[in-house]
Length: 163
Length: 163
DNA sequence: TATTGTTATACTCTATAACTATA
DNA sequence: TATAGTTATAGAGTATAACAATA
Image 1: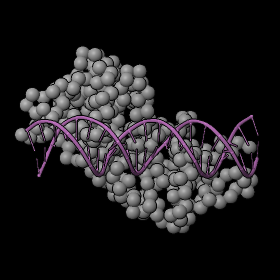
Image 2: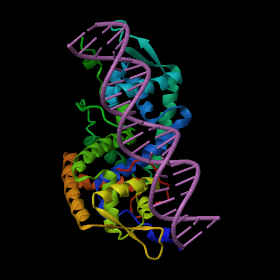
Image 3: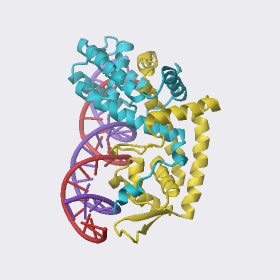
Image 4: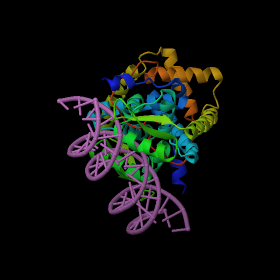
């Protein structure tokens, strides 16, 4: 009787024209793909972000990384656990404040990050396949502005699920 | 000693320039806000979407709605439970196939949907505050294209968390 | 044999509360 | 008294497996 096919609908324009919905849909798709291709490296979208922040912003405390990426400090623990277990980061001790962990990226970690970035690049091409170079820049710029990522330091409290 | 403030970093360009990251960040922020403002209406971003699909695409089975929005059929059960409990939708019986529930939106449901859309509109203005009308259209169009929402029927399996 | 809706269950992700060691 | 890190625990949200009713 093919009820399934007869009933299958396209997302109604009333929903599909809402920026918030297309945003969600694009994110979910991109996130799932990224998670997939990152798995062989022992990384997740989140730990990938953590790895970049530590690499770029020198030895950092777990709290500092969490604030930067809006990740709760209890979530940071297991995130860093995984990165350490993979040999990508080390928990050093801070001489001036023995409470904090000085997070540093290892040579292996830098290699993994490089590989992950190459993969991310490929995936980007896949995701943005239909867009010209100009359009890609436009999209990134527009998203960056609504995400509040244009250099301003965030004052927001940690919230959920950052890819 | 102000270690916290001294250590706080801005998201490094190496991460912030990746479209996938700004996408995630923009989505998380928009989703959290939408969830917040929808709560008084007894709706979530997801049930809001379900309500629109049922309203727009006539009486539908739960399976059909799920396929359209990429929501698993077991998830659909509790989603429709909530909408029904709120008096927004009714589970009618389909005369030709007594397995399926014919989902219809009630008058109260239509009212709630209207209110939710007005709220969504306000939130949109808040989210896209820095963007001109042209830029908003550009953004929606670009996102729609990478989300594969341009009229083509999806062949993908249900996946996670669609706002 | 396949499909719709359902339940029970498990898994993932994240946050809250409470603890320790430091400051 | 406050903060960094940690643990145990609870809460969402979602998916898997199995079932009844129907096709």
